Length: 89
Image (cartoon, rainbow, N blue to C red; front, side):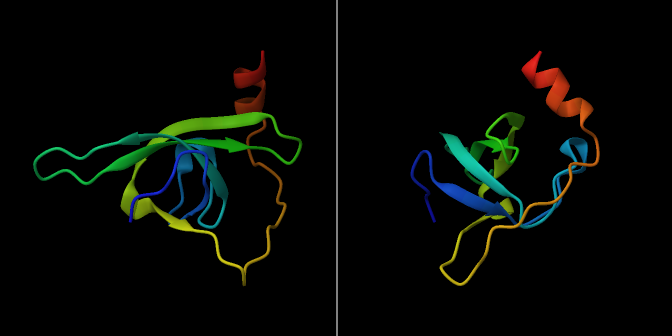
């Protein structure tokens, strides 16, 4: 399934290097077409509850899923707040 740019999606997997968890919401900022046996992917941006960027990374399409009308957004503390400091300073 190809997602449109700036669509919000949920992570299907944990992304430990950014302390992100399955179900966290990300915004698609770029599409990466797969080559040969490589699946397509996306550059994703994740924001904190106040709208500050906490992570930008690339993930394969199988690591994201669309948000559903039956789902509720949830707030949780970021385990390592130094990531936010690194990206905003």
